[in-house]
Amino acid sequence: MNEIVRVKVRTKDRTDVAHALFGIQFPMRLEPTVYGFAGNIASEYNGGHWEFYRLDNGGFYMAPSSDTPFKVRCENGFEGTLSADALGITACLYTYSHLSFGEGEFAETCARHYHLLRDWMFEQPEVRQILRAID
Image (cartoon, rainbow, N blue to C red):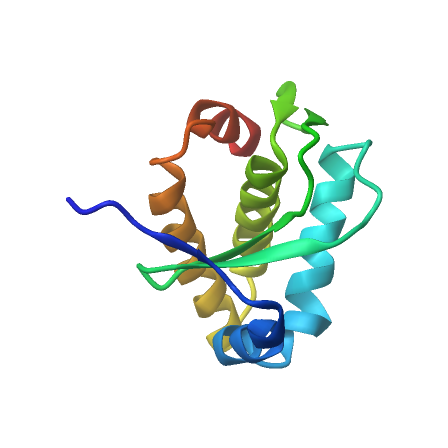
């Protein structure tokens, strides 16, 4: 099995990439939901710039642009520390799952992106912490 490759989206391409993947639902629903989940599980998170990433398996995620780890507390009882990248992965997985329970094409898109990101997550060093956070 080939390793999934992550590519950072250039600043000038962010809007085009987000629109191509999610359409108007990105700024209206997906992006604010990601920020909301990040704030709910990481009390130290208080906004800021996020990086966008494309995965060569077709996936997408976003993560805070920070070198500082975040203390995380989830409703499932998980408490731990995640890097900004792992926090972004976790918040995106929560978001994709949550939005996948709707109706129509956008819900299907979110379900697909959940599985694409989850596939890539298994190759990451913080996979155990992320799994505990999303379980």
